[in-house]
Length: 348
Image (cartoon, rainbow, N blue to C red; front, side, top):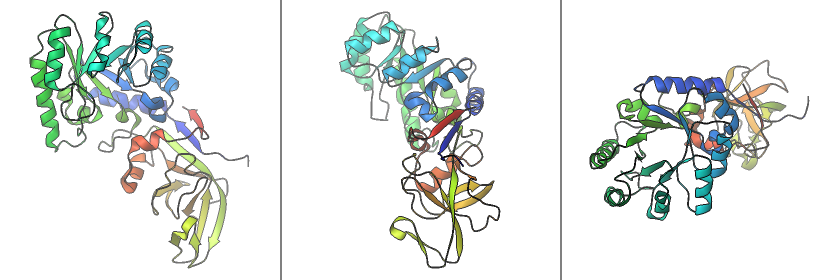
């Protein structure tokens, strides 16, 4: 067997399927922005861009270098969702036809150029970035009464339709929009909004986690990642034996365990609990012991045909990343973006 390596297989076809499903929930007039920040949530920026360019209307990023990489491969709209903070980056944005978000007074210099497309962000309840409604109206009266722009905000709890904050944010957004007399576009919808409030899609939705299949509340969305590695050792252990660092688990009976060549240096969380489900030879098995830098121990006592060199699938479209996050108090965003560069990546 060659030197093993953890492998990440990204299925662009699954991402396309997820996008088309999300678009089917919306008014056909609503434009779809795919959020590709953080290397397309760990899925590969260039490859995802080339694979979905024909079915989306634009892209959202937060880093200039990623926006410029997309511009090399697409002529679609590109939005820098946190704007720019200096004239040098502004010039780059202008040169490469990037849209810019303005979310505070320090970015008002962006409005001095009448030719750049701008999105004005208001804070409707997330309380991170964005002008307060009152501050926005002041900026609007000074700078925007004769200029087209996109009014945007971001939902904090859209994945939970029972949360009262959703209604408060929609109401605040609508109230601000009513006070804007000029023709403007609107955008507040993220993945949760598309699924739970499709009538709030307005002119643009901005979908991130959903297109990669990490949104746990909709089973139509599939994980686009397969994260796997090979078994490099099989051991028989006796009742009472302790396994792994700190001897965290103790065999309650005679057992057989497999040692898989992956660990937290590859991006698999060290905090993963025992009995977390993974898959070997199409059968669910449990992690047994603390994840280390390079190795994961798995209980294979009930698999008769398991051998060195077999694949252990940590998550995939069939063994969903959603199951992993539900059992380990994690979020899919973190798992997707933490895969390290020593993992071999391929695309299909």
